[in-house]
Image (tube, rainbow, N blue to C red; front, side, top):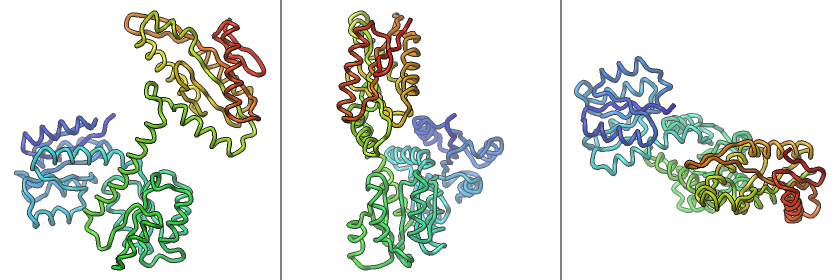
Length: 420
């Protein structure tokens, strides 16, 4: 069920544009043309259903921003829209605990609103740690972050901050104020953090009121992603926070694209070797590897066409992802898939692989007007003494044996399982 966005706007053209943007963001717009209507709508709804409110500063029954106060008092993160913006109105808006404001200048500004709404949705899964010795300063930053739906954590010193980082993997950003930080200063904490977290996995913004021009360089050289001089305006605060969070998300998208097979979405061969090599570095006691190959795949392509072949591979990949979600699985290329098992008993591995084969063979596929079935042959090895490449060669030989024996079966180092 998509989150709702409450729009309070009396201009019909602006309302229509915002409705379209909100729908495009896969959210549900709930429209009110004045404050009275908004109160009526909200009174019959659950507050938890709403992601935020988008509120016009000047309405016929709320000419001085009273609708903003209503949305904030209803605990809704609030974005303000306004026809014009002078210094007095800007100050009046920013004195309220709003998420942000936009002016009704052009469609480009509304595109910013679309990005902002998307961010409010994503931020619900992003943790931010605030490290500051002074409670009031921590509280001020936490209040700003919560307006944008971030999950917040606090630490009064570096020692507690490092402990929190070990416990909560959702933290993607740290804000650290060096002024008065006891025990370990911010630069030392940065050095400690960077031993375990890369810059593309954890963003760190340093803050200080010092006018020492070399301090920002020290922060960056010690591993910070960014630096802010205090006192800061909260618009700058949000811009820097968003910029750093989006930087990490973009890196993750690039990384995912590099690690994924374009057709099926499964991890690719490169990612598989990287993951398995890392796993073998922990010296697992038990290792197994299965190579899965679609039976008579050429016949599917020749009979129903290459589009049907692609469809078959994508459907098979869904089953691979479902049955081997606890293990390392990848598309190796063509109609071949590979699964690596670490510290799993051989009997359990065989059971999981055989269940996959049976489930696939029992599935019926429909592409356009064609109904068909397919099966797989699987080579499974438990011999790991000579590394991953040796395991792949062994599984390949067992796969060849499964094909030679009649297909639709598992051939392992211990036993052969096949259909009746």
